[in-house]
Length: 346
Image (cartoon, rainbow, N blue to C red; front, side):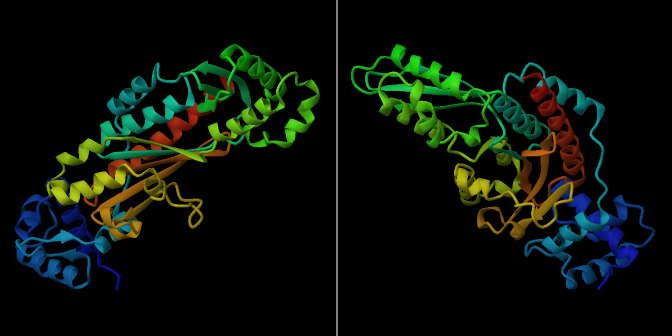
């Protein structure tokens, strides 16, 4: 059943009031605060109908109503108009990124932090592995008697490292000779193309222990073994939300936030609605019990038409959808511009 205009206005007023107050909303509050042109009694009757239709719920301890998942979904899909980011917030974002662009990791981490500061919710940035990145150089650093650290740097500023098991009677200087040879041979090649078969093509120029080079090739793969990297910000912001005053609920959520594989799965695959600018999943739509009382607002960002990752804001279902959707639209374009300019400069 479609909602008539009056029911839509009342539902919108209730949701907007609940987002601000976190308190169940009564008909008198709506009549007093919103100029809907009808009496409190009429609003009360409409609220009862909205509850019967599944758009509102009544907490047992209150005479007021709160939005249901169905109510939020109708609000997001049919009633909401994203708000524009303010000039003050734009300046804050631009100043935050200034001097934080030494490498791609810093850009992604800065994105997570600045969003959490503006939204006061958890922010997640999932950076896709840059399979088109080209190897720039390899270097070894000493760690201890039996191990060294292998550093692999790409042309996009991505830095990966792994522990390299150093054979007996091999010092770091010898390893860096290998690194120089590997750099000379592999520099400029996409990381995704580096494989053990290349070792066969490389063997004629090798002087020394073939096993060391084989181990180095394996270590390059180990350094880039992650297909994606997750950056988080604002987890502590949730403690200030009334929804998470319950210690058990907060503990379950914080435990989940520490599990990277679980958090990575929070992101949608994008296959359903590839043209959609921002996606919103509300409550149980995320299919993860610790966040049944939360919503996730997500956007995808690209550079030079290549998907580089996704940005998501996780917070209570009464989050400021209009503001956050508008902010994500801005941030998506801002981060895309930064990454494209960064790529052009490297």
